[in-house]
Image (tube, rainbow, N blue to C red; front, side, top):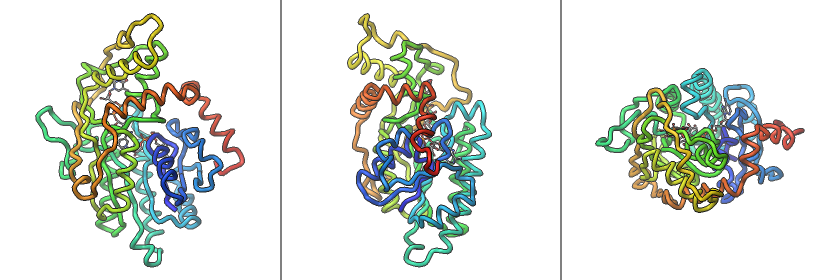
Amino acid sequence: MIFITGGAGFIGSNFILDWLNQSDEPVLNLDKLTYAGNLENLASLQKDPRHVFVKGDLGDSSLVESLLAQYQPRAILHFAAESHVDRSIHGPEAFIQTNIVGTFRLLEVVRAYWGGLPEPEKSAFRFLHVSTDEVYGTLTKEDAPFAETNAYQPNSPYSASKAASDHLVRAWYHTYGLPVLTTNCSNNYGPYHFPEKLIPLMIVNALAGKPLPVYGDGMQIRDWLYVKDHCSAIRRVLEAGCLGETYNIGGWNEKPNLEIVHTVCALLDELRPCADGSSYKKQITFVQDRPGHDRRYAIDARKIERELGWKPAETFETGIRKTVQWYLDNPMWLENVQSGAYREWVLKQYEGGRA
Ligand code: NAD
Ligand code: DAU
């Protein structure tokens, strides 16, 4: 069994769906179900015994201890985090608690569990920490993409909290020998992305006839990766990554934000044209910039390709088309998220379970 934290979030739920599509090894999913956790993402697994869902906080050491003792996982994949930069600017506390304190508590409980494992389980055990390219700070146009050897220079409360968690994971390897792996990935997009983030927000607002808020001049650059490609990279690192190493994950898809918004509008113009024949682009509105906004991220993904043979399957063009189509095909998911009904859905569907 593998143990996933944050499996009801965007990337965690895509990972679980993907994992169980390719393997019968069960998944234990611990998620606090904050606003970003949505069990509706995993509706197709509701009666599937291979998915065990537990509602809880990764910082609850006695809960995690008892789960480890009961399920004896061979690996922990740590996705859970507060993940939205804008929220971290308005309220950093939860980021410190979950991303730093929560990761610390998890590491401590896992260290005790791993220390008590017999061989060969002990040597085979892995703690895979899912992190972000934002820990490296920001690039100018001329800079080379982020390599694993770049210095950490986080600029937002979110990225600072993730950087701190990366350092803790590293220290637990060097000090205690915990068999860890860390991945630092660029911006993901795809199904089940909470519509507070750029791409799903633009889709949702465009369809609702609302403004499409572009921060500053819209020329900030992000490096985009289709979420299923992130999942395949994590699987690859889990099976073949070298202990204590970090792997940057990206798809060489640098795009300015404004270009992303134009692409989303063009796809919607094609797939769901406005009744009056106008383009969704007319809804684009330039708004005040994000404080401390990093200008450019770009990932040098040569290490994971060279050492582990991983490459993304999607281009940005194929991935973004699939993504826009997914949102058009899943209006109920969107409606439930927007109305807040997804939280009730959770309660109704999982009533009587451990949730
Ligand atoms: P998300 O916000 O969609 O999901 C986070 C999940 O963690 C939610 O289900 C939430 O309920 C859960 N959670 C939060 N606090 C918790 C706690 N204390 N205990 C247990 N569960 C808790 O985030 P995401 O976009 O899926 O990101 C997942 C991971 O990937 C994060 O660690 C993030 O830093 C990292 N990452 C994200 C991206 C991206 O583009 N989204 C890119 C690189 C790395
Ligand atoms: O780089 C990886 C990171 O990508 C992850 O670690 C984070 O968890 C994830 O949220 C994401 O962070 P960003 O801040 O890059 O993502 P977001 O979708 O919030 O913003 C993408 C870009 O778009 C960023 O430059 C800000 C801009 N933006 C965002 C929103 C929500 C806008 O211009 N308008 C918006 O309304």
